[in-house]
Length: 257
Image (cartoon, rainbow, N blue to C red; front, side, top):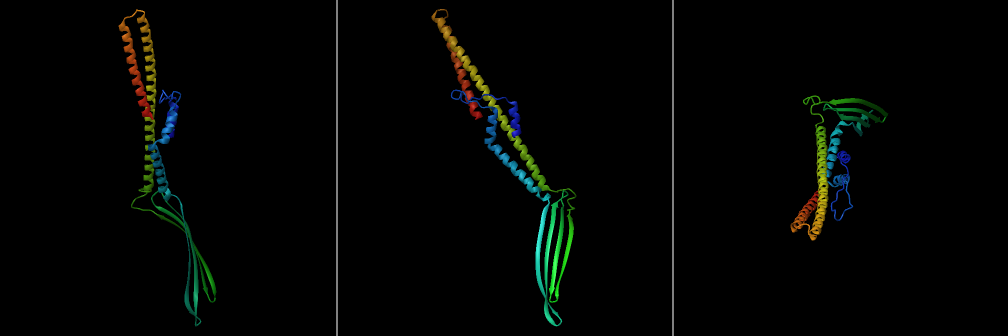
């Protein structure tokens, strides 16, 4: 969106846009200022920008299964077993400490890959003493759904999220281009209306000068009465054209705003 605005700014030369010439004759607004204001205040572009952020967040969330995930667990178990040794009652106390650390992720074929390290320490205590043992193991596990086939249907949620994100990006570009196009059209229509009004005002001034000159010539008796009437009619026509041009310029200014 911003890239499109910069391209338009580079192509379009600044043009003086007078919204109210009679009261704001010195105020000039460039096309760059108009585009910046429109982009900041457009509710449509604000909505598509939020849609883009949501779509990107959905992609990141959907792709979380493809990242390595740490899995860890620990346990403590204590139990006593009564026994009879040498004709006397006794007990065997067993204490077990277990721990597991592993890594897991979803692979591109749609399966799950897991690496795990297990360790267990067991201590047995009797009246005669204690004995300890440690058991450790390393394992690799791969689960692959065969009915879907290799790489068929893997990461469906992530693919859908990426498609939605691409659609949101294209929608943002389309809405931005439409906004800039409408803004440019209204901008140049206002510029054209302003130039037309300037021509009409100049034409009215010339017609008024022609009427003054015709009146002087009529006072001297060099032209008939019809010449004065014709000059007045010309002034009236040009005054009407000026009013129409002023109305068109005000309408263009309202459309641009």
